[in-house]
Amino acid sequence: MPPPLPPLGLFQSKSGLRAALLNLSGLGAGYFYLRSWVFFGITLAVTIGLLVTAAVMGAADNLLTWVPSLLAWVLATVVHGLFAGRQHDRRLMAQGVPPAARSKPLILAACLVVAMMLSLVGVWQTGEWRLRVADAAHARGDCDTATDVYGQVEGGFQLSMSPSLMDRARAGSEACRLLNSAQADVRNEDYDLALESYTDYFAHEAARWEDTDGSIAEIQFDYAGQLAAEAGELYAGEVTEEVSGTYRQAQETYAFIAEDLSDTPAAAEVPAALTEMYDLATSDYAGESWCSGFDQIEMFEGLDWDAAPDIADRIETELPDAALNCGWAQVDAGEFDDAEARADYLAAEYPDHEADDVEKLVTHAGAGRIEAEMDRAVLLGESDLDAAPFETGGGGKVSVEYVNYTDEEMRFLYVGPDKVHGEVIIEPCADCDVSSPPTDTSCLSDANAMDLTLDPGKYRILIGSTESLFDRPLHGDVNMKAGETYADCFYREEG
Image 1: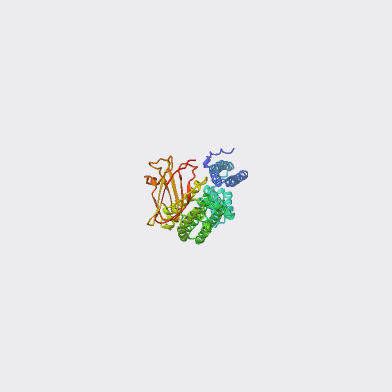
Image 2: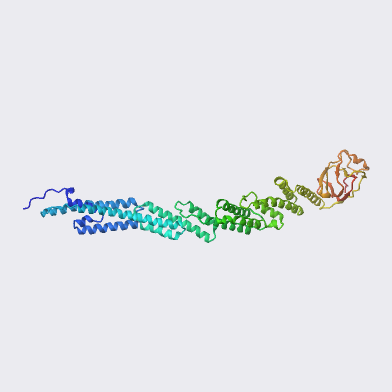
């Protein structure tokens, strides 16, 4: 009967320690050392299966799941290797064969562990290299290639166990999507959308492409031209808020190119483009449609014209010229309030522009208003004004001294040479018996008599009540000569 086997502790088994260390690689090398082929095959298959599944299921994105799982599997093979090695030694000792004490398995175990670690590091570094390839294509603007490689990194290098690598690949792919969208918008001539897409792209943390050839400036330039054309199509004889806003946006876009993108080829084209846009936008002024031309020029007042200073000079000249000519056109059209508003504008904004003509415009507008009032007053009938001078004397002026021989106010309207005009209210007679007409010229001494001095010339005159709409006012033209005095008592005939 053989002697009993001495006790063999778990960590005293040399084969167990070697098998455990060899199993640290996860390849089942400890079982290969023990010639336990079944366990070797199972371990190798499970390890490969775990690695393939980890790669497919996204190990880098789920480190808390896969790292513990892989470590637990390796730890399980290590522990099981200790027990399997001890059993192996016990069998050898039962056969009277002492376990080998060679150091080669230990060296092999260390090499296998290092090889596995290097493999994982190799996967990681290969992924980093492919990411750099993708970034380089991205920086060239070749996002088709870049997106393909980014996808390869994301899908093929999960075993790198690097969440950072995955995040950077996805961010690069997202940035490329924005860049592709912007480039597609440019091809479709949707320049406003393209600029928004480019803005989103450059704001993205993974943006790599740089606008080295002035592409953005060219897009801005095309966008400004598109806006100007759109504003021209919107204009239908009236400057609306939409037309004005679109033109101003086009001008501001051109100005932005000239100032902020001044080192691009597009910036050199801005002055000519601005001049062309201004000429087209103010074509009514060139065609002497003064009022609409004024509105067109006013759209561009106050904008930054540093890129085309000659336009600023033109606005400074053309805007008041259009306003003055518009005022005269409004007088001709009977729009006297609007004409006076133009004159007020010129006096406030351009006090040195044709001051005499502006004053004359105000005079003509006022005269036009008086004549319009006369026309309304005689719509229902009139009485002929048979005005003859009361007396003739010396001097270069004409004196008008009419008396209101009624009990209500009367008005005296006149328009004369050079559109001199006015309206005078004649108060009722102070001490008159208005129940009957005056019998002599003593009525002319009334304290409320009108006292007006005029230059000689031909005057249109209307005298009538300020209260009755059905009054038949005195109306007519009177050729007044220097030195003449016109005096009379006007009364109301009953019936």
